Image (cartoon, one colour):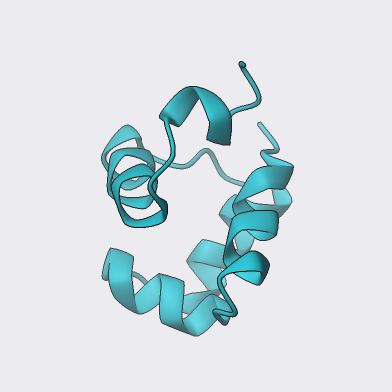
Length: 64
């Protein structure tokens, strides 16, 4: 599933894919695949990103 807001939030916070990948303890290529919707992002990563960005998981996945 593709979550456009993953990239939007990263860009809004002036972060690179590598910086977000480091936060999640994964490789940049793995994170890139999450942003592109090639792989499904694990729930634990969604929780970590929601906490980091100060938003809800619903917001990240487009459920407002």
